[in-house]
Length: 454
Ligand SMILES: Cc1cc2nc3c(=O)[nH]c(=O)nc-3n(C[C@H](O)[C@H](O)[C@H](O)COP(=O)(O)OP(=O)(O)OC[C@H]3O[C@@H](n4cnc5c(N)ncnc54)[C@H](O)[C@@H]3O)c2cc1C
Image 1 (cartoon, rainbow, N blue to C red):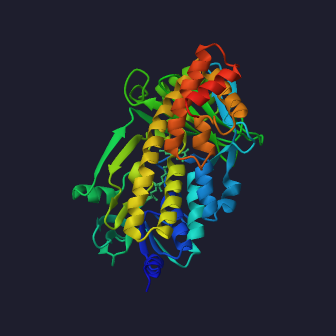
Image 2 (cartoon, rainbow, N blue to C red):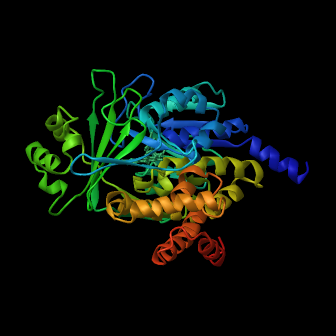
């Protein structure tokens, strides 16, 4: 057998265990089986097709070009289309309830899409159950892994402990609190740290009005920026919205001071009066809904012998660029490509980590920066001017100047690290143009772009 035939045989024969049938684990299972791998996909929760969704993380989330491209590649985008609500910009709300819509991009297809997390997961699971190469089980919780043999220890729904027969590759797609990552960390096989954000979040449901309309402009992501904190709201296909309050955990205006629904109501009446008016059962919701924590996870390495961490298990980030899942989906596409073209599973995993880490580090940093932009910088007097100038530069210098937000959200072909690098250079160009009082001086703009090698 030639080396090429041997490699091809090894790839075709790969048996892969994926821990966690969340969006990343399930999408990866679809991509790997399309290439002929056999996948054992196990999930600790009950089957979402027959049980109510478990809440805890966000109820809906935003998908952009990277996530959509991955879903299309796995053949599920069409099935998801009816669940998507297009958002074409940020609708800002001041304390008087006045709104300003800032478009995200300038081409008709430069939109982001809100989707219900549980519906998205369900569409992926429904696709996976029809694939003979995927063995899908629910109610199985991974507790440990042996990185040498690829054997995973499980607790099944009845509480029985069990160790499986092993796999060529074990993918930990078990989310930010990954049990497999903890198991490897406890054995000293990897290091992981979490930078907790000092701000927590709480979600509130804005119901659809009885008159058949929408409670807020439907084609927008709504933001109530207030400097140190903010409220946002994303549309749902049923004309309701999911609002999320991001607020410091401690301090003067903080979750610690909102000790009861009455205090929370007074705070909302002061800061977000127009939103408060849209939540008739505010007190009950505020008391009942959990207060979630946020943070950025850094983990080294992701690849330990037969185990590879992916998605949030490897690099959970704060949600302010709406990219955590988009990034996890992009992981899946790259990994599937590498498994198809690299010589052997170990080489593919090592290459995956090498190629992917600069990009996940970049989006982690940009997501934190975007929090400041959403809650604070948008209030600055020159914010709208900068955004408009950026879009005008993109029109006049196509391909050479693409606003960083657009690179991240609409250009799946531009890696995150490249978007971050070019974005920093572009900021310098914008600063210089605005400082020269020459927002419309295009020859100067051309010179500055050339000097920045853009
Ligand atoms: C408030 C908030 C808003 C967000 N908004 C956005 C957004 O707008 N856009 C975006 O792209 N991203 C967003 N994200 C990030 C996004 O939710 C995550 O990046 C994404 O869910 C990660 O997917 P995952 O499959 O890696 O992990 P998860 O979604 O956490 O799935 C992990 C799966 O593994 C299972 N599991 C866990 N432990 C075990 C175990 N021991 N054994 C077996 N199974 C196990 C879980 O039950 C789950 O099904 C947001 C996150 C938050 C918190």
